[in-house]
Image 1 (tube, rainbow, N blue to C red):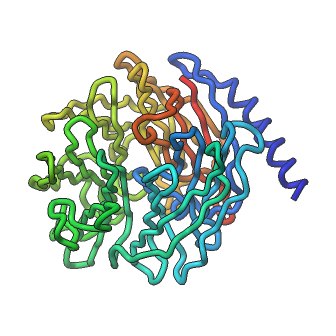
Image 2: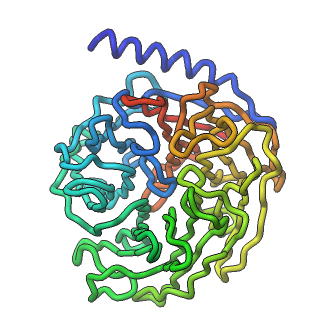
Amino acid sequence: MGHAVGRSAFLSIAISIISLLLVSPLGSAPTRIFEVATDSAVGNNSLGMPGSQDVIRDPFGKYLAVYVDSQGNLSTAFANSDPASPGAWGIPVKSPSPLVAYRRPATVLTTPLTMRVLAEGGPAAGDLVDVPVQIIRDLVGNIVSVSYGNPAVVATSAQYASATLAHDGSILAVWNSAVPGSSSTVFAMRWTFAGGWRSVSNPFSAAPDVVIADVSDTEPIHPNVIERPDTFAIYVMGNRGPRSNLTTLVFNSATFNGAAWTWGIQDLAYETNASRGLSDATDLTWDPVRSVVVAAYDISRTTMYGVIRIDASGAKVHVDTPSLLMTNNEWGVLQVDPQTGDYYLFTIDTPLSPPWGSEFGAVAYTRCSNGVWSATLTVVDNETNNMAISPRRPTMLGLGEDGSLEMIYAKGKTAPATIIFVRLSP
């Protein structure tokens, strides 16, 4: 054990020194990367969805990383000190072993003492379960451990869940159910402390809302969900599965009237040039400088990303990247510098047309400053065995934020893989 910790710390220091030398083409952006855990499943199962926030900074400034380990258990690692420093991350705490391995967790911090994890698997294949987690702290707010509650089935025949915290402390969750030859549907539900899981539009109903339904293309949809912090409108957007013949994004939104949400009319061709597959799933984030939701998606058969700003009226403006100087772009996620409004798009540069489920490559990013994207990437990790990126989003109420851009990704083509933490300091 002592040798393992020492080796981990040594590698982390070495990686950090190298990373600090990296300079963005549009200005200096020191980067630090550190090892979180070494027992992860491969990235498309341990992390997966860009809307499945798997690294969290709590209001006390402590960090939690939730992933699926190589045995299919939920695992939570935490750091009470600077997570971008040697030895900060402790030994992960495991959930009880499920009958069916968990996959693709979506984590939401509900209070400083509780969080909930949505994940595929658990009692049966195709189940989507909600696992309550208690965060145990000492008197000064340090995390001592976590404790997993019993998983509850939210839906069956479900996959690709995304979840976010709403303005009122509830959880908004979406997922896909694809029935070959019949339909591909995106469902939504809302969790509250008082009522548990209920319809988003009707709190008296226990049935999920049908947000998007496509009977002409029954391949999977990879949905993402976000709530606007200004109007509390909900946006749901997703791309198509890898075997679909369509390069369209699907979209729907719900308006908030002060008491409840009302869904609008679905758009099955919100954009028409999107790449397909989980590794090209659409990312959604909030730009607090311009008060717009920002969507990022891979433009099919290019090394470009479509970047869309959506204002409160629903109007959209493209600020797409140029063709990036890379071989093939996968796993793109976008983060916004809350002070400057600059955009940082993280991606993984893979071999051309990798087989589905084998989209491994080097981690890099490009930056948009003053409305200008750089076509040149800054490399974060040049090893070619990285997969899946989960960005950290702002904390509850924005408490403890310092402007750092942070994320985790998985390193390793076979299990056990390694979870890596990255901090970019603009």
